[in-house]
Length: 105
Image (cartoon, rainbow, N blue to C red; front, side):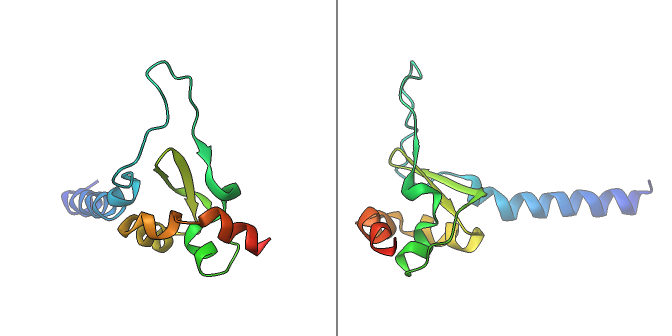
């Protein structure tokens, strides 16, 4: 492999890391949900549906690649866009989320 190819691959890898790292970080105020003894487990909120979609009146299943833990619950998102929206203001989405989800059933 020549030096130009190595430089191109390194640049690409760095760009990918910069783009996707913020979405792997938990929302501010997240509770890990596991005690020091590992006795408490974290539950998946609203049966794994995307909270951003539920708020807009749609029932889209969340994707396992776009997951955030917030206040002791796991939230799955339809995509990166929805996860980013949630992370900007999680309380906007979690307030009365269960009631909104039940209304869609």
